[in-house]
Structures are given as structure tokens and as C-alpha cells.
Length: 281
Image 1: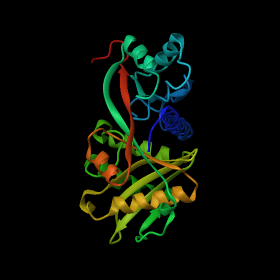
Image 2: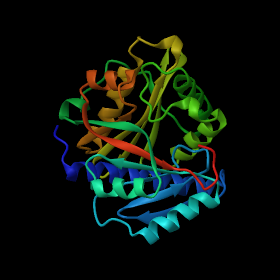
Image 3: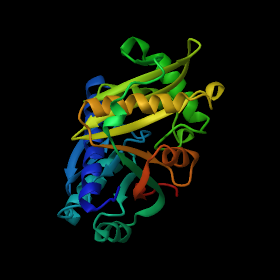
Image 4: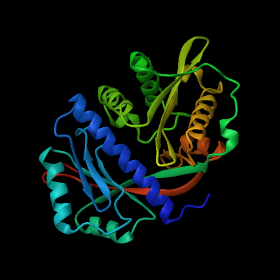
């Protein structure tokens, strides 16, 4: 699969939509203060809590770039809450945008990789395993526990940010709020009746976003992640999706395992951060 600007724009649009939907869910649940969503430069600026990994600017750089006055407004909104501004900018976006951000004091803090693969008719075929359940609200605590435990002990689970960067209670809140977003489903895998792994799927505009998955350390290397992946790809194929996408940290076991399962590196996102005035570096 070749990633051109149009594909990157489409994927980043899905990510921006997910961020907006999550903010809407957080606002409805009233689980965080100062929630806001602001469209900017074809993307969004979203705050869902100072400690939230979903608080960021995403999807900018594929159309008309925001004026300095728009960036001023966005930065004030974050800073008034005591939050830094985290901008995730695709390497296929207009490079002028990154240059603008660095000139405004943003510092490069890292990268994340976006991997994808085409969804085919074979993905809709039957599965050998049947112990994968779609999780309803009543099963959320069990799902949260196994996924967060996996994130806190990274090995083969696909994650989008280091879990130890965020408090466990914040991750629980985020997972609960994310689950109420449009097109979002949670899956729980069991081995010998015990919760062994969890994963999630979000469908948007023909794209299947594999938003997070993890296996409890006790059940790794027993085919749990493979079963969860196949189940989600089957559901995505039956829903008419064309592309499956995973986001990982560069050079991690998560990326290696994703590529073993047929995903290819499409592009990266630079993570640029500007701290509030007076904040310690």
C-alpha cells in the first residue's frame, strides 16, 4: 500500500474525528473540566483534560494553514487550563506548518508511526476462535483492567502512547469515554475463561481504526492478539471498510508485530509541544 497525501489526509481526518467524538463523550460524561473542540486549519484542537493523551492538535497541514491569530487563540485556550499544546503533524502534511510551529516555540518531543493495510474479502472469512466477545457497558471494568494492565507492561499490545505517562485513573476515564464515541466497539478475549486481552475498533469513512489492543502478561504468546486482530478485521470487512490503520511508537515491539501481520508503514507524525508560559521544561 502506497501512502500519498490524499491517503494521509483521509487517515488524519479520521483521527481528528475520533478526537472530536471523544471530546463530545467527555463533555457528556462531565468527567473532565475545560473540555473544548476547535476546528483549525482543516483539523481540530481538542482538550479532554490536562492529563489526557487525547488532548492535542491533529489533522492540520493538508489544506489552508491557520493564521497566526488562530494559533494564538488555540494556544490561549490550552494555556488557560494549564495544559501544553501537543501538535501531531503528519510527515506528508505541508512542511511549512512544522516550520511555523517551531518558530513559535514548539519543541520536537518525538514521533509516532501510522501503519495500514488493505482489507480484503478474506478478512471476512470465518475464525477458528470463538471466545472473543463484544463488550457492553457492564463488562467495561474487566476490559479496562486487562487493557491497562497490558499497557503498563508493554510487549506485544498495540498502543498509541506510553501508558506510564498517564495515571491509571486517567486511562480508565479515557477508555470509558472513548467507548461511547461513534462507531466504537470493544472486544474481550478469554483463555480458559479468564480475561486475557482486549482491543478496540472504530469505523469511520471506510477506515477501520484499530485504536488499542493489549494482552495480559500471563497470556502472551498464545495467539490472543492474532485472534483479536482477525475478529476486528472481519467486522471491518463486513462493515465495508477498505483500510485498517494502527498507530504505534517507532521501533517498538508493537510496530514489529503489526508489520508481521501485514501492516506497512505509511507515514509518521511529528509530535511538537509548546509548554505554557512559565512552565518548567
